[in-house]
Image (cartoon, rainbow, N blue to C red; front, side, top):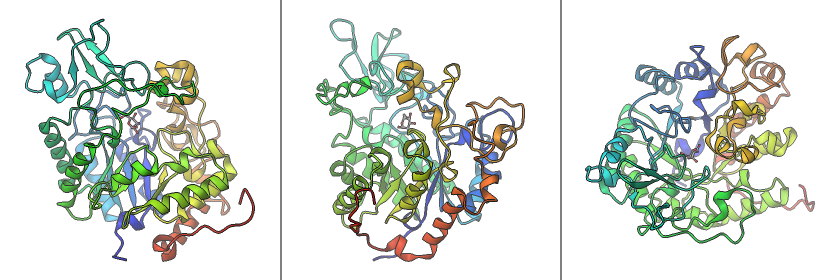
Length: 468
Ligand code: GLC
């Protein structure tokens, strides 16, 4: 085997910046807050920190609606704060990944403001503008992931624009080469600063069917989420997306040891294509199977075996147990199995990604109806318990002081602090040798000291028992 790179040997730790550490008492986490917690991050023996978006944004989707790809939202701090964080991360031998959101911008991005200004604006074609259907309705049957149609009518120019998330997230048109060029420039802006790479948001949705054809009904629809009522065969995983990803990869490859990990929810056969035919696409296409599969030993064994069996030659595996879009691990599988799951995550072959707070077993927090903020839950209150993502985005539980040490006493935090913070917190678990946190650290230390756990091969062993 060739020498392993940092993103193969190391662990990625995802921080949701709004909820990690609030340094200026406004109830929202920020960059100086993260910087003040680097000792803790380092104590976890992780290699890289991935920050969910920190860019200027009207926050309709909590930062995934970007209004400037090359700036810092004042809520999180200044560019100087960012530079200081990056320098400190690097001085500790750690890496920093940013969240690139290329599929859509905010409707307050200057590109969209121009595009919407008139039908003949030079940036009109940077987004998807279409005439109404003959009945005045949307141009096709595509749906928004967050509920309702994927098209919004703009009376100013009498056309609809496309958005697969909230209406304030218009989709960019990557069939126009200027759009890709602009996005690649945004990547270079951060790479020139020394950022080590990107997690790329909904990378598998970046290009749509050229003719914008209607999507077929989904005969397997389980009746829950209306978004699943149709198949997404013209909006997801279009063959041309691979050309885009190769261009993004070329930008990364012009620098030293930078990487990208793509957000992709697809079955194995399609997922593997995102490594690229010549391993020239994503360094890591996220593998979310441990999140999505039922938590049963026999199921997990099979999915690990199947994944290992179809990895392309030289394709590096990766595993994920949680993120800001999925219910908390400890809630999904229970507190005891959350430890088992972490052991699996940290000993399987391939790069693990850990979501902040999962190392102390944080659970979903019930959000009182008047405090629900996540767009799919606001838009579909009857589905909030399924589609709402606020419960897994609550403030990090640092200690047993009011607001859990995330923000000073008396501050109204943007989402409620978990009711169990007095007993479930970093300080308490630090002091307890048998805690989940110390178990996590022991595993990450073991992983670092045992090459077999990083570069070894994998084979499952039959225990002869269904749940072992
Ligand atoms: C991705 C993000 C999610 C966001 C969506 C739209 O799935 O992980 O949080 O809402 O894309 O950007």
